Length: 494
Image (cartoon, rainbow, N blue to C red; front, side, top):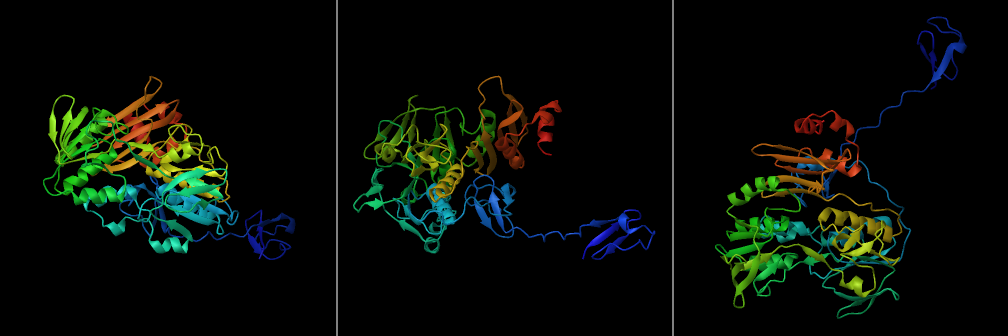
């Protein structure tokens, strides 16, 4: 029923018309005005889905998990998902979408393509014998923290329900862009209407003498982890080459298997891409407490032995005994198929904002893709790019604008954030540090904008810092009103 307000005394009359006069003050009918009936607020719905702000993993449940199963971020790094963002309408494309690669980029592309088009035929090709799995959890598997059946992202029935065809042990040997066909090793040709390249990357193996000995290995696939586990026993002497995230996680995993571990890093400190030396010093203490021997600033001359490595020889002449060597020295993109097909390739396959390659019907995502001269090489961007490529291949229209390099890590029990430019190279940057016995923080500004940050030991400010960097929001007021680093960090707590 309509409500009418007496503008003189505030009396409210309900009815189709205002009353002839106000029964309270006697005001005439023309002094009444119609008011809108109060609208009940929408019911508050408790969230049931939570997104990890670091890697975009979605957790189903009434509360966020204690630890992200993908990247290890803590519960404070999850935000409630209130609604699903609709990027395109379903049913726009009903052709065949073929995805080469069963990593997170390929899987995310398949998921997004199916969400965008219910009619499209989706075929996912993988060289592995396994269902797509959490590659980041291989070191947890190596440490004995999770069982093999906990690695897959989805069970087999999920692919049947989504009508996504998965072909295992399938190797593509050539792409015919004119005929829109793939040549399959030991098999028939496979035709496509849209193609998504998500072949990822392979471990970089430095050209060191003796590198091809049989017990020099890398960790990229589950079969690699199985081989390492099958050849490790208590007391085995293992040398890990590389002090990045993967090298540290491998070293820590092997220590838990009672293996004697020495870690060699050519740079002067650990995690040189993500941390500065001051921040790395905090991590170094935790590494040594685990019993891992660190050899920093060292160069390997050769691997000595017979069929197998027995000794790692450094350029200084120092010898390190080894029953096994695990190389974790970075990755290189699997770009040879794209090169053979005539697509533009630099460090990776060059893509535009829609993640299209030089060929209109071919997309690329994940470690393989190079967007605006950047190959990200980490889980979260690969997952994000996979979604973009999958949506666009299925008829949608969304763009990838690039994201700051970001790592929310939990390495050897130490919480860390590294995001954006953490290695400023000229005086145009302003840096502020804060440190105590257990925590270290550095924030980096340029032109009144936060462009980089390192947090070690306490990552509670991660959501705000990540938001400020990604949104390129001006921090002029914060800088103007701050007299010291303490003021800056106090301001970032608000």
